[in-house]
Length: 159
Ligand SMILES: [Cu+2]
Image (tube, rainbow, N blue to C red; front, side, top):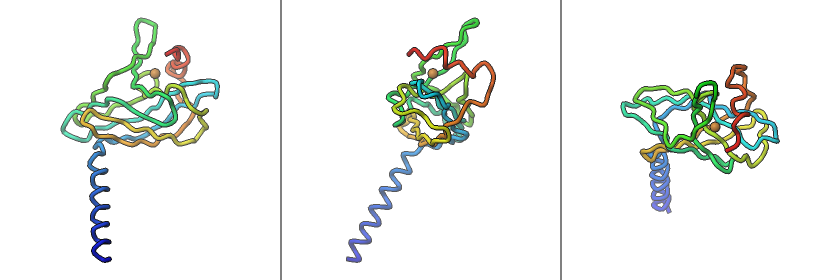
């Protein structure tokens, strides 16, 4: 019996260790999801990504249970027109910090399964080119910034 227990605990240890190894070294802070009225089908997630390593990282996708599709987007300004463009990947150089924020990079949540509630927490998983992932917990809140980015998402939600 004792042996079995020992074997089980060793197995458990290695399982936990394997999961830890798959985690990305990236640091994610200040994560939030824009609250949108229930009529709105889409929203966006914002956060600060920091790459503390000596190697460049490439964010290749994101996933979440709250939306039917999740895409990496950037906002491109052409003259006076702002439009969102899907990004196949977003590179973060060694020791670089990248802001995902209104009017810039964001993670698009397309086809919300349920209306978002203020202060609700939303889990997001970031997937990197090297196969690692980073789980992120975000809080739903109203957009505090009153600048031009505030309603950028209203214009082109016609994906
Ligand atoms: Cu977008």
